[in-house]
Every structure is written in structure tokens, then in C-alpha cells.
Image (cartoon, helix red, strand yellow):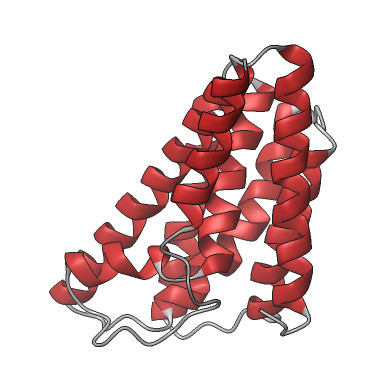
Length: 199
């Protein structure tokens, strides 16, 4: 049991390790698959939110394990298209920071939301994440490759969250709930720090 809890915490730390900077740091030209793939890994806000999406999907179980992450990626692509088109979406950076707070809190409190409500919450935050990165992409083939890389990395972070949920779940119900809630709480607190500009 202790080794499973340790593994879960190590997995969470490994997922957050690349996130040494928050929000959307300049990583060079926003073009090409490799830049798109690297970008989500460079922002603490995006890494934490995406991992929490995966953990949330695992907590809900059933169809939610694939519907929640898939919905996020697809709606994020829509948000990205709005950004590329120059269509204004208000409070994007605040929305991204709030996504970390809310998703972390949902995981910490083990909220068993109805699937429709879960998809609505996920979709709302996906618009903000997608728009922020879509606004940075050029409208050409290199931009399309960047978008593909960004979506692939986001999906990978969702899978990491699902894996973390699974690993923690194997620790046993009592220990698993404690570790999951702790991880969600840490993410929510980090989100408050991002929202306040402290991280």
C-alpha cells in the first residue's frame, strides 16, 4: 500500500516536473509539431489542469474516463480556432488559473458530478486553454502542426492523470482517497497562487 501511495505521489511530481514556469512563456516560434508538443509541458497552469482533468475522469469512472478528456481536447481545439481567428474571449488568463483552482478542488472533494455537468465544466475551461494558445499560432501549415503537437501533449497529460488515478486507486480506498484529495488540494492551492500572480 505504501509503495502504491509513493508511486502515485511520484507520478504527480513527474507530471509537474517540466512545469517550471507558469502561464504561457515564450518558447520560440509558435510553429511546428515539436514546439506545439513542448508548450503545454512548459506551463504549470496547463500541466496541473490537464492532469486534474485525467484524475477527475478517473474518479467519475465509466464513460467519463474517455468522454471527459476527449471533450476537453476537442473543445480546446475549438478555442484554439477562435484564437487563430482573432475572436476575442474575455478573461482568458483568469479562466486558465481558475481552471486549476476548480479542477483541483473537484478532485480534492471527490465531486461526483453528473456527466453532462462535468462535460460543461471541462468544456468551459477548454475554451480558455485553447484560445490562449491559438492566439499565438500562425495561420499556416506550421501552425496546424503546432496545434497537433499541442493537442497530443494535452492528451498525454490527461492519460498521465488517468494513470495517477489508477495507481492511487490501487493503494486501497482509504489511502487512495487521502492521496487523491491531497493532490487535488495541492493543485487548487497552486491555482490560487497562479491566480494571485505569486507563481
